[in-house]
Length: 246
Ligand SMILES: N#Cc1c(-c2ccc3ccn(Cc4ccc(CN5CCCC5)cc4)c3c2)n[nH]c1N
Image 1 (cartoon, rainbow, N blue to C red):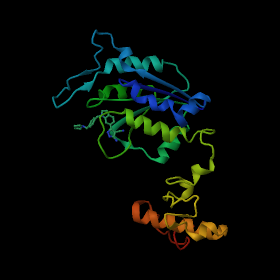
Image 2: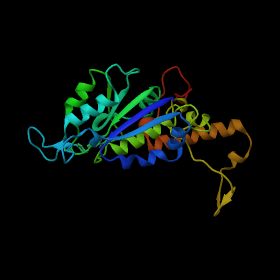
Image 3: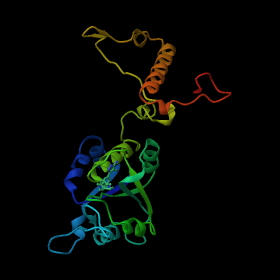
Image 4: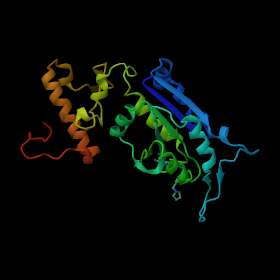
């Protein structure tokens, strides 16, 4: 497979959507080798305990290191090659962006550690870092209850970049946040009918004048990016084209 992905979580059912559609097909066609594991497999007490009170006090509970140590040891036994990358979603992680998705899509093996409660005992990532690359990532500046939703987001963004997953690879470069699109947002899209509830499709798109269409689309992308995401609009660089893009 192009990518092997192991996900460890106390809510394996939460990852069921990965069996559907795009990612499900990638798994069936052998492009993606996905395995979801229940962390409690690596507990040994009657109550299958995965959490305990935080040292130093504070609200909530912290995930115990032992089950995680055993889970990662079982999934990545010493001597495993290629050494996987451990991806740990956390509110305190580096921002997950398209560039990070491209980076992860180049990896042969990813292991995702889904935390819950107030997070995972910090020694788990520290210990793993002695054997593999550990990436603590956040999918955005909002608070979730655990890492599972982040894994759904990250795996969708990563798997769609794998060769053979998306029918039309060209669409991968023409979309928002793709480097080839200068990181601009894409403009509006239209399909038939040419008039719908009195709303016309912009005539240039029906003109067949591909030069004009290309210019119009770029203008729309720039305008929309400036309105919705001014932070993404490239600043003109001295000595380059008028709009700083060419
Ligand atoms: N990716 C991603 C994420 C997550 C995420 C990812 C993984 C886990 C594991 C547990 N939680 C719950 C939680 C929520 C808030 C806090 C902060 N503390 C609370 C009181 C003082 C600071 C700690 C844990 C997680 C949340 N949230 N938002 C993202 N973009």
